[in-house]
Length: 273
Length: 289
Image (cartoon, rainbow over all chains, first blue to last red; front, side, top):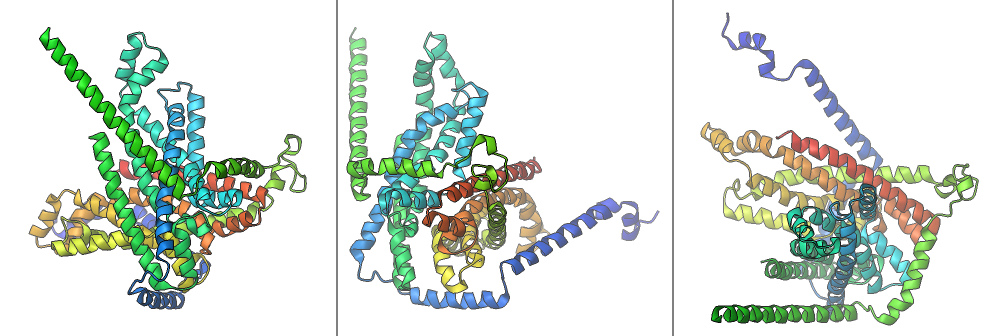
């Protein structure tokens, strides 16, 4: 009986690390991972020289971004910001109004038919895969350049997101209140009105406000494809390399988003208590 | 009876107050809606003019399929093959897009993992470090990835590299914040044990904190990967690689059938990746419990 480290290692090999099979698998995994990285680097032409050239170019741009300057077009910038916020507000509001009935249809405790419930939810999930910018580009082709296309894009993309969130919120509601209304002789519609809506309304409002915040962020880039808002200003200034104005607009954008977040958090606290 | 009257009066007063508050809120909402409609140029006239065109446009995207020849070859008009006539190159582009998102998520997560420990209040050596790292992460997070891409296309040239870096930069900020929050919720007793046994700060992070937080990190990385796949599908709009470039050109040239085909493929790919990653996430979280 040896009590040296070597002796114990011989008697309890598993206490000192994984068995050889697992170890070989780990090495294989690491090898495959490195191989995958190498293939991607060759495929996407990621070379050290290209990276260093790009990064030095980036530093040139960063130096030109300081100090930020508003340039000559203050009114345009402010109008773009206002447009972005307005697009987000209107788009979110319309989307929320449309998403409420869809959310009820997608909730398992309202629509009992499993097949209908499942297919409605899958449709929401599917359309969530289409990014807002794709909607924006399509709507720009359909209704022309301008914020109207942006509002429509935000509405279209947000309906699916909110409908899914609403459906989940409705499913999480306490069923006992609904049962009480039904037990007292209320119809299904009355049960939803008095047993379900009072419970879920604060949750729905909170989620709508959250998506207003996130849409303010995304509305700021819809202009890149011509759908109105501050994105157009950023894209135009990047095209002509007015980097100091680009950084100014980005800072202004960050401030606006922070202000909207604060305001929305306040409203949320007041409404939900 | 006086008690009942007082109750009734209090009830009425409360009802009136709620009505006034609701009315005020409704009026404010209506005013905000009117102002934003005016600012974003959504007028009844433009809506009435635009609505039919939206319908027309969306109707044109619906593929022209005929049931009898649905599974006929690529040459038969109205077949699936005719609709998806460039399926191979589109699938390849989608694969490229997903690989861009994977590489961007991975590199972003690697940097976020370095930055998140000093950004966590319980591990930062002092408040200044905590504050500085938190603000840095916020800065990375606040700029949308498309804006990064617009700038990086200038310095790294048109192509996937600019897109990957743009998504990675945004991911650093987004994941760094979530990681730091996970670290702040970690149990500090293992940390104290490692430090009491003479371990350095790095030892503590490696042996006390990392084993606790890794499952959560993996779950957040997978979640971010799903988001980044969506982002990567549009990053090509500004010339930063992936399926977006192709989608942009078919939308600009009004090749309606192709638009529909690519969007269907994107939806399928994104749903597939979401489902897979959801599975993996439950596995990663399940390991802790």
